[in-house]
Length: 81
Image (tube, rainbow, N blue to C red; front, side):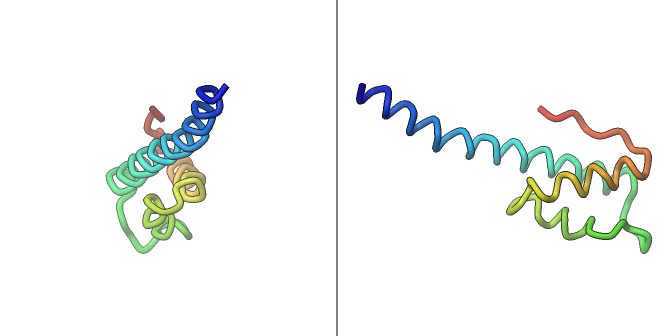
């Protein structure tokens, strides 16, 4: 029973960390794609610079902003691994 509790605890701690790392990687890929395909210009969509900056600290909120900006510019989104 102790092993089961220990396994549940480790899983509950490790899974959010793993998901965060994946989100951060995907967010960085979105940012890189935006820079490459759209560039930085005076017409940069509202919130994009903040979303790019937030990829390391708050990727969950940054990802939708970057996805929308890329879709609005008719850019194919990078694959999420």
